[in-house]
Amino acid sequence: MIVSDESISEKTDNELVAMSLENQENFLYLVQRYEKKLLSYIIRISGVKYEDAEDVLQDAFVSMFLKLNSFDNGLKFSSWAYRVVRNQTISEFRKRKVRPLQYFEENDLVRLADSMGSDDHFDKKVLQDEIRTILDQMDKKYREVLVLKFLEEKDYNEISDILKKPVGTVGTLVNRAKKKFLVIYEKINKSKI
Image 1 (spheres, one colour):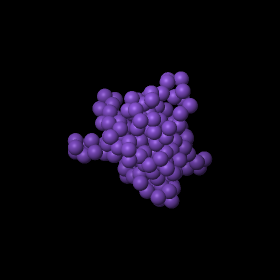
Image 2 (spheres, helix red, strand yellow):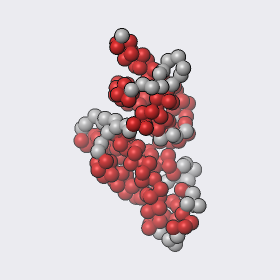
Image 3 (cartoon, helix red, strand yellow):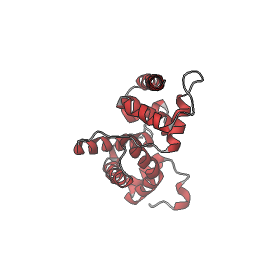
Image 4 (spheres, one colour):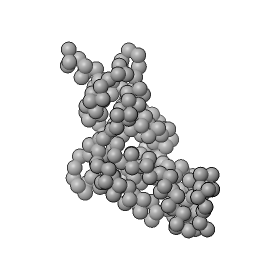
């Protein structure tokens, strides 16, 4: 059975997965629902050009479709999709043997600055170049949790599913990442004096 366009917004991701297993044409609705979010995520964690990110995403969607039978309905589809995309992105960079860079849009950096701020430690009007510099200096594991938490707006359970780490570990990583962010920020500002 193919779903009508009108009723798609009412369907949950898991319902669309089940329908996609019955008729593969329904998988297109999941692609349409997640395409923009996942494309943005690839660019944020990899720094590739839009066209290259589209290629990675296409490969990830093919992988998702081929693995759809193994999807665990007890998980959120979005977490599973992000994990597949993350793994596909990492795999692509291993093939290229390039260290992934990060690409953040202006509004991403403003949102991240707002999320990191505390009254005493962080000036929310930090220049975007400083934020990029800080993120470039952070370990990948910390940078990635900041992207997932504050830019992709995932909760700890979703991040846990995506990274395959316990929820407690995710909380620790987020807290450490915020602290490291502030330490690097203060170090950069002290060097300007």
